[in-house]
Structures are given as C-alpha cells and as structure tokens.
Image 1: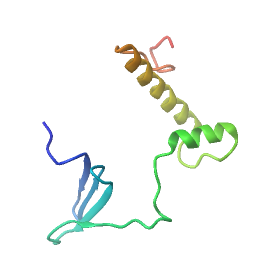
Image 2 (image 1 turned 180 degrees about the vertical axis):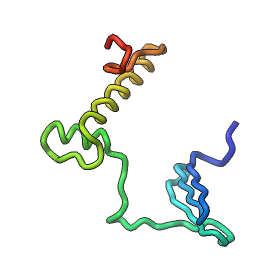
Image 3 (image 1 turned 90 degrees about the vertical axis):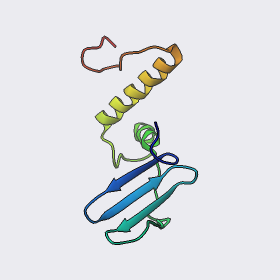
Image 4 (image 1 turned 120 degrees about the horizontal axis):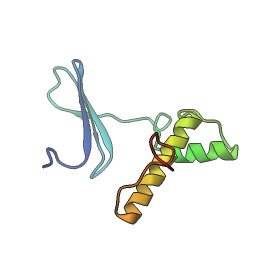
Length: 105
C-alpha cells in the first residue's frame, strides 16, 4: 500500500519539515515549525548537484578527476553490488555479490 502521492522522501524534525518529491516533477519543499504549509525551496544553480557516483568512480580510474565523495574501496563495493543486481535481474534469480564475505565470487 502506498501512503502518499508519487515518489517522495519526507523528513520531520523538531524545527520543521523537508519533503523531496521525485515525481511528477523534482522539487524540494520545506517548512519551519509554525508554518501553515510547505513552500518550494529553490536551489541556486551553483549549489545544485546530481547523482554521479558511477561517473566520478570511472573518471577517477581514468585519471580524469580526483574522487571527492566516495573512497575507492567503497566505489569497488558499490560497483560489485551494481553488477550483482544486473546479473540477478538478467537471470531472474538471486546471485552473490562479488567479493562479499562468504561468497565464492
């Protein structure tokens, strides 16, 4: 059962609320304690970012950029996990994550 319209993440704290909506359009909303409703929070273009973990990891291997957010070992584990997901989906069955403790891969 779904408990809200669209795909979203909500954080509720003692000082207010943040809500990130993925669809139908990506947007960030927020309110402080006492506000009547959530307001759209505009993110300046120089502060906006996106998901680029894979791109950063590959660029680091190629020597194009230095890793800023993900250490190399964590990147390897992430890529192992991503590969296992792809293999599992292709086979329609469970698969081991390469290099994980207790696996033969």
